[in-house]
Length: 463
Ligand code: AMP
Image 1 (cartoon, rainbow, N blue to C red):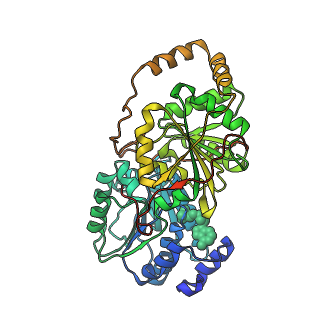
Image 2 (cartoon, rainbow, N blue to C red):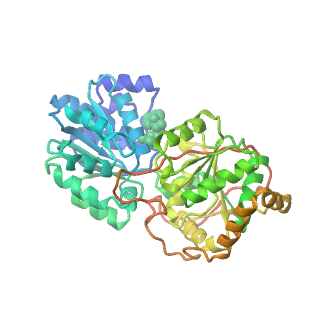
Image 3 (cartoon, helix red, strand yellow):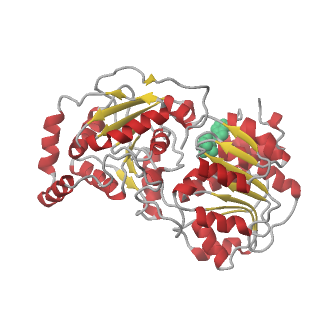
């Protein structure tokens, strides 16, 4: 199957050849013909599958074929994404794919100048990529009119709901004409998403690729049981001495909270190891710098929260380290999906404290993968003492106090659908992502993950 056979225009084909794409990915093969026909679409696919091109390429052709000019303060195609980083990435792809199509493209998301957004929209645009919060602000101010939208794309709908954007979403869709094409993408299909899709889509074609649980199976997954207070020492050893085969050249470390991410970075620095943090409290330039240094390989460790890492496409993450396990098992799948991109194998290591065992159980149930247990390294005790010795006294006192408190959500398995840094509404989604690095290494190597019984062939996991 080639892009030509999918019926795309010469201008799009030319742009694809500049990008070096040769073969359409499975989601592109399935989705592009439907979108070209003008059908509504329900796509079950994660970031990394090529879904942006799946909706963007045929839409570019349809917008060009319709041969209309955007009216003032209007857009013809609206793409909604949950985070600014994802919106930025989609916009970059749109620019690349529409390079020869002469369409006007704009992006609006929180953390950027509203005045600039207003100027960008003043004369109307063909394609607008936005996060819901900022979009509502602009429509409230009269800077944007959604009455001329021909194509609506909801990207990462499950994440949009998790981030509390449902209200903004409803408000936005009410402003868009009913007569439109709607393309709806989600990595998971829990009932709330199905209900939303059925409200917004008319007789949709349904396409689905690499359900999250399947993606997870491509990653070597390990778990190491360790006290919460001693995780920093374990991280130090793993980053310094390596873990398993292969270079740890880009390591993405996940924490549950923003403060947790900052603490890990600070403590790595105390041990002489450079890392960047990326989370919702960081400014846009800080995030961009952190991501840039990680991409360029200047800093091999990036510490991120879930939301910050959502949807970020950085190739070459060698290892994902779950410094803390997520309390929502689907987040685990999204996290480890940062490695093993584009069909490559990756390695994920989870540091599991006693009060996280229920999370681990939920994760194993969802992915139907039993994580391979690795023992603590031989030099672990010595490292714990070294980390304690270089921690300033005041900081140690605070940590001891914190460790003495019962865990915030207990080891409980009931999960709030929102993570610690999610902000409903407001400026926009937050977050970015990145990945850390390490080297290669030691530790026992118990072979691949044992896969548990799988029923049928790869339906989307429940959420
Ligand atoms: P996405 O899932 O849309 O975020 O895409 C993931 C990555 O795959 C992006 O870096 C795209 O540029 C790249 N990509 C998308 N489609 C193709 C293709 N057909 N061939 C090669 N790379 C692709």
